[in-house]
Length: 173
Ligand code: S3P
Image 1 (cartoon, rainbow, N blue to C red):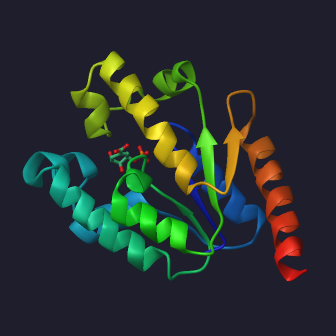
Image 2: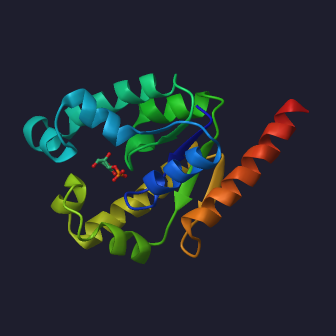
């Protein structure tokens, strides 16, 4: 992996990940899509039929495998909040980038999307409390934090590319 994107649901991980991969001429993988392929069913039905614990097991196995493949990986919003995943992310040398967004931005993006079981289940205040609670876990896993509210995907990708090339220069001495 060249970079791993983390952040709450609706923070733009998939959009930015795709664009970043395109600009770096590399592959993009979306962890949720890999889980869907592996399970042969959508995330909502994995949660409904097997529960969140089963989903998290699948998510962990899929993350482990995805991290061995080159390219850009967009994770799910809960991925770095699970201890085994956090450990994996923190012990890897792949840069982890947190796309941070404020509450209004997130609500606007996820409100009318029925594909996220946690958005369907939780009322707005509980969802925002979960977001607040996760911030510290995102911060612990991240090597770079980008506050994205005022940025377009193109601007976010530009910032990531600049940071990645500087980080690479520092690593190479
Ligand atoms: C989840 C986020 C989702 C997906 C699942 C659980 C979470 O991914 O993995 O619904 O716990 O925040 P996105 O962040 O891509 O929506």
